[in-house]
Length: 490
Ligand code: CS2
Image (cartoon, rainbow, N blue to C red; front, side, top):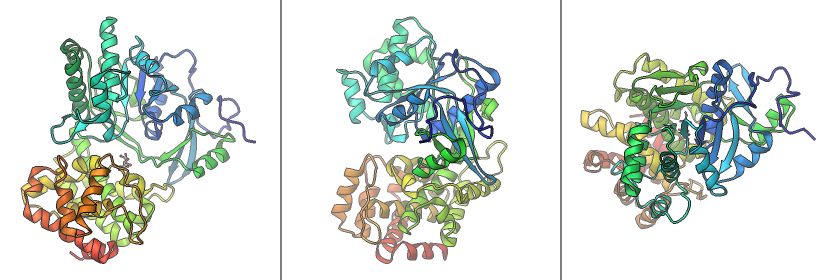
């Protein structure tokens, strides 16, 4: 039997590993949502930062739901292997910046204690778009969100991320401790501003003095994060075993590209993340918009259209000449809606994205990207569509992507096989699908009218509605392949 990864001893020399003594270092970071993306991204920058500049910047991770990550990582002393799959082959690296992982539902007091500990200086988050309790219609707190509603009620320990943060801040205030920096690393536009508002509204609903304390002592810099990280599979674990000689239940795989752009606004210091290549800027908005509209927008489009056209992986979509053309069109149209991005040539950015999507070593599932559509569409597709509409620019790329989402939302593929939508609004969507009885215009109307999802400009535009509904009709009546061909011939 292969021995489990429990220490850095006996790793083959080809495996890069932490070059610093982990034991004495304090935990300056608490990370909420310690999943594959954090392990392939921020944790690597922190590993580089500690290696280069030292500091008490180890991370205590928190899982907000499942114990799986904790149960895999804690017996390994927080160590895990990162497989980096680049053009030149695959390499393995052991990351040492995670100290341990707590499971919020199992040990909420330990989580609150970690955030309220004097040594905590940064609380970072990757909890996915739906984890915040954001009401897209107002940009504020969704008080109807079950976890938020329960936490505002306040009878038990908080279970939402925002509830945990606010309660931990209350404890810091009461103990006379300093504030922290809250660092949102999710794909939301103006992510720092969003979290500041949600935390502020939640705190004000509890105690205005606490809200004032947070406003004064806590910072919320925005960030743009980027690294394509497919879910780990049995194949990931097998390859790790081959390359390191160890069994590692916590291993993750990723591409070689990595980008992190951060507003340099930290209240109590930060790791030297530039050691790993992070870029510190005054304003990340332009970078964020570029990434959300070009990378993530194209991703969502190709996930819905690709899944229905029978492509399980992004790389297969890129091997489909027609779909690859639509990816190209999407990126070009999205680029047109952007202001200049400092230091970036958008045509070159698009061509790098194509290479990354095509990477044959990365098995990124279209089904993985397709989840949580209602949480992703606004910033990826609907905002650029609304801005194209205002300027009189072509709408086809967005209308096609949105129609593909609607087709996907029916929950069954072209062979009649059903799949789970995996969207927090799936009950509402299912009701619309049911009512529409497969009538494309009814389905399009029902989904366009979902409360708070589509911006008003789009909802009120007849040309937009007509385009979406005719593309959807083609997908439903003639199939995704015919719809793709029709689109390419436009
Ligand atoms: C993807 C992203 O799953 C998705 O929705 O579009 O996770 C994407 O892979 C990352 O943002 C890349 O940085």
